[in-house]
Length: 387
Picture 1: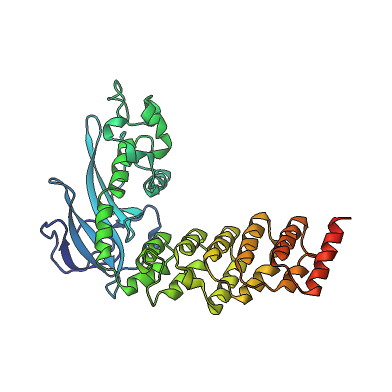
Picture 2 (picture 1 turned 30 degrees about the vertical axis):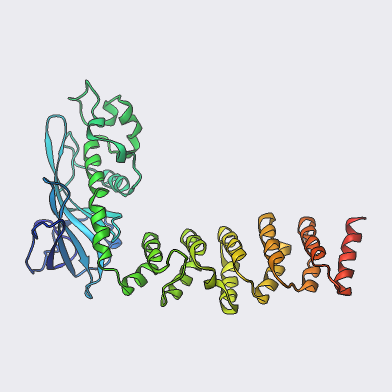
């Protein structure tokens, strides 16, 4: 093969859409023929094997897609050795490039075959800043290029001008100026659509055939949040009930540093997962270490969960330091509790500010305490606010 990647061994070929396999050999791929213009190969996990699939997007477009595997045969990422003509108004130029995606079809990086380089319409070779800019363009999944056609890039009356945003005055090119490289507009357009095209759906389909407990555990513990979302939806049903064996993975995500996936799991997980003394003792530890948005999510989640006496006491201790939003949520939780440690709650009256104390006092009134100690603390509070 002319275009090579990290040391891979071909172990087989597979067919997509009923096409014939494009490769059916076993051999060691040359590892020296890569022009790593971005110097970011570390983004990819070490691979030893590959499986090759023939992808047919339409009647005239067929190409090979490779799936990189580790020694154990577990999938790591997809890649494709690309040759494509990038056509301008009067000429086409060949582009050789290698693309890499994760297992859900999300673009990761690119490199070039050895001795290959990307050029602009005026035949100037890309500078390092151009290669880095191209990576930024390709990595942007929500690019303005997604809604454009090639013909949108041609301004009537300027067909013979250089392929430069600066040389054109069309509204479309002004709009996408930050989405392309001057002098390589068509190259950026063509490559972006290849990086984010229909092949990504095929990657999702192929990855689904590898779905296993091992893969799900790996995805849930991954730093790739998209893997975590995908796997979480596989191990939780519509009611949020977790498949046995994945409870630790879910707890690790909830207590992890990615606040967005943590909040998502908290919102989706079944209330039973957070019930019981042990579970709520753990949840309190998470709450105390969590960022503010996650704390709010936890408090809202607790509305649907029977609170253990230990957690109720913990919540009461935070009343005097709670802000308005937290205070409101905690008071609602305490109102829902069948029983409250009223002496502990009344003791918070002296430590709380005016807003907090008012909420605590109202809650105490609702419970109509019979304790002389609690009544005395309430009387002292009344006396204080009436002075």
